[in-house]
Image (tube, rainbow, N blue to C red; front, top):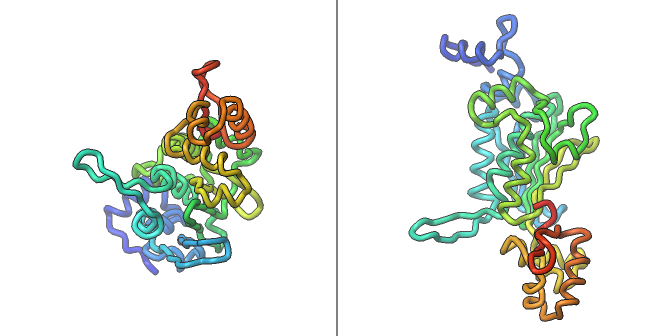
Length: 282
């Protein structure tokens, strides 16, 4: 499985510090070899669509070098796995995905940059009607917790040479802002902030869009479902809007909002009529 080198691409590999003792490094193979998974088992991406956790409807595998995997995976998600809502602004046709594309693009790049390529398990993207989960066999920097990812933090990539190549080619910024960008993009999209999880199995980023079916399945009342979906559609809600959509008194609306504030909402604004509520983390 050779990589044929001429003076041009040899110079590129040397500039990216991907040549050691006249041999291409592992990072160089992953970045530029046409079939890196033939050498490093599991260095590809699996994508599947699920209706429930145990009901897989269809799936794809994305192979090729890292740059090809990035582009092919993003294209596959946008054309096959995610249903875009179509709207028009003047003569322009706007496609809006259930999850913001800059956010899941960032999550994919993070998974690639931080994957443990000694593992034989590929990166896995599980897509549902109301959520998307990106998992990779990676790990946080030593002594870090999930909380570090929700505030400004330094960039400490697990694979520095891969990250450097992605930075030099314009895919990432290398400032440690990836997780913050995901949070901000979800807030702009009026959906919950991404859920970051880390355990012995690897690292997970989960994007979720609230649906009526999901909110009912976790036991929320009809009024609470209406309130959360209203905020998801409009960005925020006040006491007056709760009274209108739930047909309740001002006091009952206040009680509803106080109850939802425990797990789902954040209170914003000044006192009195200036108070409004957004989804938690926005």
